[in-house]
Image (cartoon, rainbow over all chains, first blue to last red; front, side):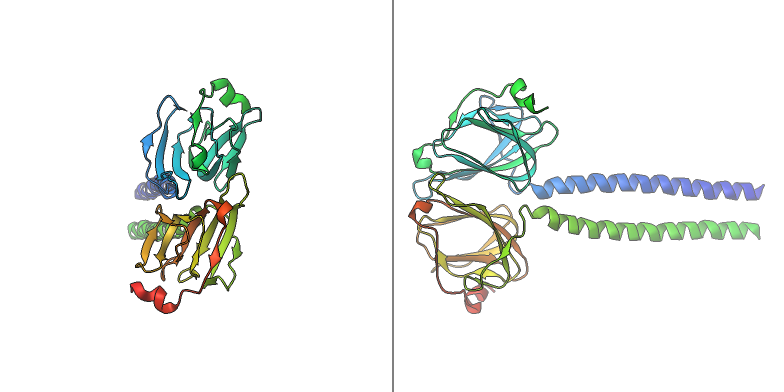
Length: 168
Length: 168
């Protein structure tokens, strides 16, 4: 009888230990994911983008204001999944640098392009375009607007759900 | 007697489990550190910088070539600890964006400034300056050279050890 009790005790100990290990592994994965997102954010989250220029939730931080010395405006945008800018264009063009996540970019009349960490995307002067996160991932994106002596940005219409979902 | 054997078995089970947990934790920490460095590198490591313009080991990746549309040259440099550029100057100025690590930056006649992840540093047109890693940490640094229609860079003398160590 006592052997059965001890066997059960051992099995119980092993079961509890296994459950603990599994929960520890889950915690470790969750913590690693959280650490990963924290590390990938190079800049402060910033202010939420205005609803008249953005669909969904995006947050913007200005890094360099335009002036007559550098003629360059630089900022960082965090797009949450599904969020995107309106269509817009820049008289001096725009360069996007992706630092984390997965996003979409489209020039008028061309198919959507997928952007990933480390990608650099150029959009020529006065070409209508939009950019944002993909449906399932956020996007950390720096933007560089050169030649600001020619102007900065002209905002246009929102990107419709049909336009955004055209890749699916 | 059988009770003693079973008690010992339980204790042994617990000891082995504890040792396993400790090793798991160590492995997890080691993996997290390795993941951290991998994640912070946004761009490929690139080619080693030429010895006539750099002291120590630095690696450079070109992100945007200069052209007459964007008038902007962008690249990424990984400086290993102690590595730095020569003194140099840009006719159109330069903007540095730090994505990881700790570095130094100095304009001629001013004290060394420390640069960290998320910092943005501007150096005005035609001002002599240098930048690089700190002695104990590498530096991941993007550089943006605007107004390239005015020229790109003029390389000058190496930064001496005395100049580099002036902060200590």
